[in-house]
Image (cartoon, rainbow, N blue to C red; front, top):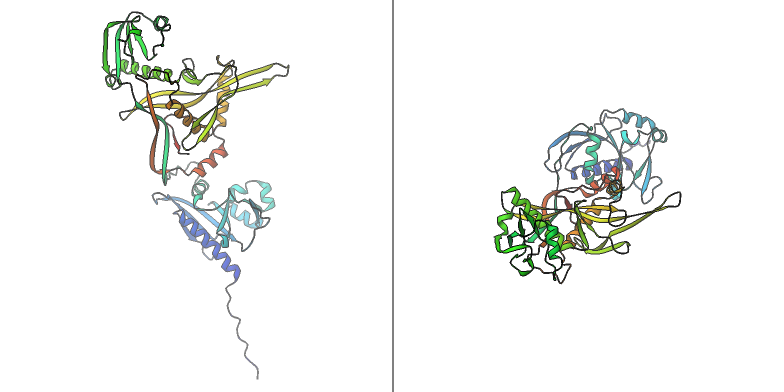
Length: 451
């Protein structure tokens, strides 16, 4: 008697399971971005789903879409190393994806290790040589598909003129400014009738006195104005000591009179000049403070305590170049900063803007100063600028002359810091900075990550 043949049971193939696991991994990553995933329909050819981008901070729909073709592997990728691997695609599929009016992403994954990598079809295969090879070389670092890929996806989804706005990244971040707090100002300003008409004439008298009187004063309209008590005997030769008047510093610091305010800022600058002299000197023709050349002119490194650790910076550099005719040219680079005092919400700060000065002999400005300065600023990155701000802040805070008279000296505190609830994706920022080779920041009231 013949036995009836049982029908073959339905089987869920390993390949189908693997493919679905790859799609599930993509969906999970997209949801971590706080964006949307819509699986493709059964009738679609060569497309497994659609990503709709949402602002990760506000949840606002951005009207930006990307099509996705998913490929998953169970074990190793082709030609896999620690840094890259290859994945082949058919030319027919590539041409199909390139004709799409919506950007198409190829996402290759290994669900067992939760790895996923992506490329944009239109951008990757814009090179004819790549289309001929039909093989995509994935970089495991640059092409990693993760919840941090949102900004790159938006860049691929939106045309250059789309004007899509995405809110700042929600993250706790402490920013450090280039504003050094003035912890203590001189408490009094003295005014007296001057018996000389120019600072030069005054210094001819004061320069011979020991100890040398301070330089925090100006002569204006035959008046001697400054942070020093002109009733002391060392000032007898430059002013009428019977005319000395004393004012609270706040009368000048908070004055609405632009002339009085300008005089006060001039006195602050002179107090800073006196504090940093002689190692760091103010050069009026350069409008900045610079590290003085040593004698003899040799490279100098100076230690400092940065925002988190001790370090050092080269503050004076020596450069030489030999011409074809054998002549040797030498020039010097001085680390420097532009310093401006600013009043913000009732507090005084010194704004520190790092720069350099190039000289031909340690004193005179090098004739190629402008081009050399532009060149170094093209090369420097944000971290280098932060280090310079930290160096100058630490140096300015110090007491450099143990024997100096401290009456009315400026006292500086810390760099102003701000806690924010939104910030910048540092990895993405640095990646784009490297790709574009952008110049160093030109700082005005600059803010930096605390490093």
